[in-house]
Length: 364
Ligand code: SF4
Ligand SMILES: [Zn+2]
Ligand SMILES: [Zn+2]
Image (tube, rainbow, N blue to C red; front, side):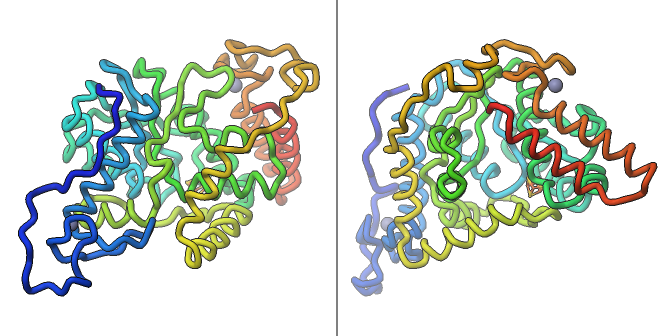
């Protein structure tokens, strides 16, 4: 794999179109008619130049950050949504075009959300055939004996994304481990990343802020690394790419809306973007350039508890940097809630809030 970034080269020898006004011409090839304004920089481009420049930017991100090595097996976290569908398509295309020499597998998590995940998994199964890639599905039910629908029925909708996020993260790790793969690639895009930076700033969550702009992350206690090749790709451009390439993706929102704080941060980002499109990349760059004061090792939770990489959860035996993994803590709370509910047939909000408070005190 070459370590040098590619510069822009028009996708084909453009033929000057005499019938198109100069103001309507693509600003890259100056020959074909522009059909869209890039949301990222408002540049007017033709369809072919958009494909080429978008694919080249992602290739450059992969090369500049040494995301893969030749012969590496990687799992694409595939949900059937626009981001992961474009990701699977893009990695297959770039792997063939630039000969990365990687072996791609689709890895999906079935959270057990009727009317949402069952339909989106049907899309992933079609993608598997369209791209000719192997597919592995791991489910919450099989790993934890709970579906998300059961969790929401028991613990309420308020913290559904917290449960879902913790369980899905571990489920992806477990799925990758089962396949003998230690690199999971996710479709997180620039909007997601800017939104996370903003949320961490607003919450004063310094520990997470530090990691939130990393393109490759590895959590303590887990052998699986994660990477985000779409870190600099705007969500709107991913949607445009999927649309013009006629990719088969699932666009319905999850039945359980994102938590209120994330939803508000998302709205806020969208408003900022409408007056200043570059703010998404600017927030990411700000996050990348933040230099945080280093903590004294004795002040950190790890320094205090003595837990190091390679520790295992005392309950399920899975790798965890705490005594019990986050999934087991949540499962205990759920089991307690289920018992309470069956006795009292009452609301479970108090129990869920208690578990959330417990999670906040754990190290990440
Ligand atoms: S919106 Fe929340 S509950 Fe639904 S899939 Fe996403 S994280 Fe899970
Ligand atoms: Zn063009
Ligand atoms: Zn555990």
